[in-house]
Image (cartoon, rainbow, N blue to C red; front, side, top):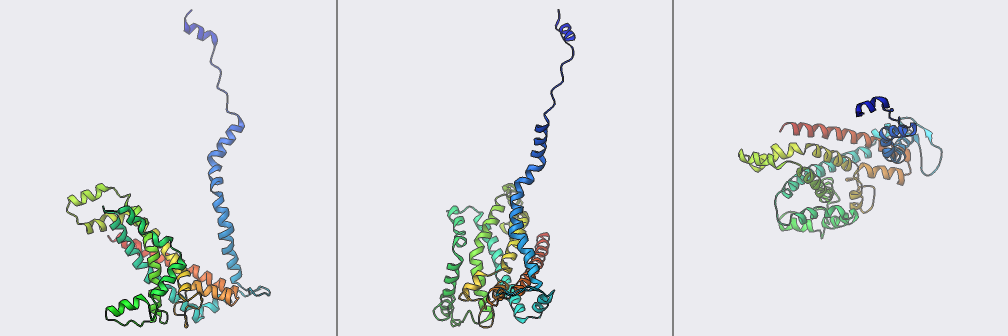
Length: 321
């Protein structure tokens, strides 16, 4: 008897068993719900430590809320109206924007040049790349103390160098606005330039070498390769550093506080008091928590405006090349 005859007598093959309902349910859960479950701890932590403080600060900013005690009476937008007419608050805004401009623009430009240099073939390249991160791991308190001594009026090294160059060496760096801004900006630049340089270097490492080789064959110089290849290719990374530097610059706190000797007034006339220092002074020195919360929300708005402005400028500069 042939094999086909045996197959016909045996009849059709039995259908495959359907998957069990629990297994099918678990499979759907694993595909659709498991990713949300895995990322849920971040959103839970953000809701507790980010969203709730944000909403609570807004609630406090609409009230006369004193840390020393008393009832939190609703005052509406009175705190915001008082802030907008407060000369000390606007002085802190001007100081913050000025220090931010002096620190951020040179910082990012130096980081780009430093990253481009470290991207070339150099002896001891690994040690040089590790060396630029040394300021980042240094305590901000130690950095502020050292720079405060460097900018000392009578025995500071900066004034001594100015004297060697034949310039005025008796500059009181803390007494004037522009001198204090410059001193604080150099602290920020020294600490964060290497960090941004490493980020730029990591982005440059992803650029295919064939692009540079083709550009060199066409006769493009190193400067032309940097503007036509390197900068456009790392443009998203540049935008990221612009955002982070804007947020960090507008919330500057530790460096000016240590430069002022752990005071919140920012000098005798508030010549380098930042918005963050002003908020701490109002909330925890004057115990006017509602007023400080309103200042914090105005700082939040200022950060949004600064990020938007820098984003627009960075896109236009990147697109013009």
